[in-house]
Image (tube, rainbow, N blue to C red; front, top):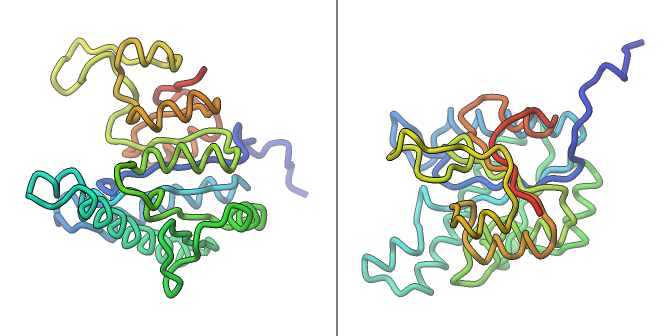
Length: 245
């Protein structure tokens, strides 16, 4: 019989994975949703799902439409934000399709009712899906304009009593200043919420950050380009920057 004690033990049981819509965009093709890119992301999600981790995903829509950018083009902010929410639904369906092709049972829950393509967000139903080993993808943000998908991640993590928010980015952690502009930028391995506020570190928007701080939900910021980054994060390996109380 295989030695189960030798199997890796996840540090976290229930996680919220925050993905920006931009991570789905193809580098060379320039497509809003690149097939090879989304498969890499979903393969990483499958890796942690196979470790019996309960996984929720909150996806942004910036690869298709971003509300703030719409405002700069003359689109009303409220209208633009709703357009952005619909973009997250497209991304969420793409993730669901890819995950299910990899053999991962998945449900999409929307903050805006659209019964033909997604379940409505119901907290107890989401919890039940997680307990049954399904990945739950939350789309349409909070259902309200003026709130980002960062806030959605913080809200869902608080409601679901998630152990941590895994914020996947294109940077390998949180720095004291922009590492792309300043070669001497210093990376933090761990930082407190209060210190992050004092130094005005760009972790999440202020509403999301306050929710996490008030509800004691830690945030791990890491680079998704490492093909096993999410697994490393789940197993507690040194990766990215941990923000906590």
